[in-house]
Length: 288
Image (cartoon, rainbow, N blue to C red; front, side):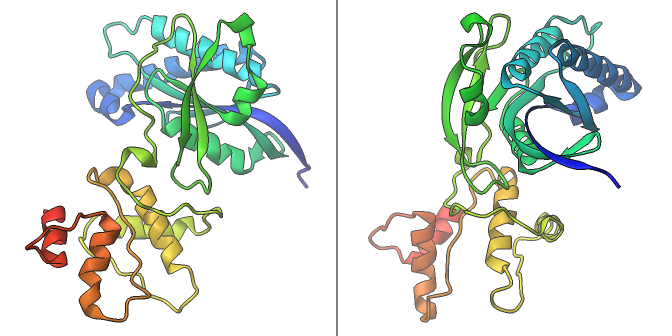
């Protein structure tokens, strides 16, 4: 029987930006690039006391006993990646996220919400960038004699997380400094209500998201109180990047008069009233 124990650790998650494009460009050469990228990151992590405990594709999970070590390892890794000679191949740009939280240790692995949080924090970043949560920021201020600093990026709603995350960009000599805004839900126009609970039902969500890719209208049916609205909101949040013009939620459950549906939709979309146009015409113009 595997023993389990609860521990507070800091996690570094890394992910190659544009990995699909690199695979297509490099073909079989991508294996060497992937192995080199992993060796550089793991070398930096070991140098700061980190342990790699998980990988999936081009993503790596590394655990640290303290937040400063994790931050410094991320900085070391980005510097190593930036200075490496890629022998004429495109440079590998890696986004990194760091987060601290309580997890359950199961043998050599860990389970817990912080692992999902650090993955989402990383996904909000850009290649060459290090993002950290408020929890890690509080524990690692003043690290490396102040050479490592932070840029406050404010609160951001991230996919599949119940509450907004306060994000900070890690800055240090030798690192790129200018990046676009985090790739959070705020970047896409939306009015999705904040969810106060963690979503349960990922298999159903992924199935619905796949169906949405091939249709303009997807209807979720089921008895009342079974979570159809929560599932729809989660699918909308997860699919936001596929809809550059935005994703919106319009509640029609309280609308008894069908004639009020267009005006309710217009209000939900934030469409301004215009003289001479009916609510339906305004919605059609907005969606055109």
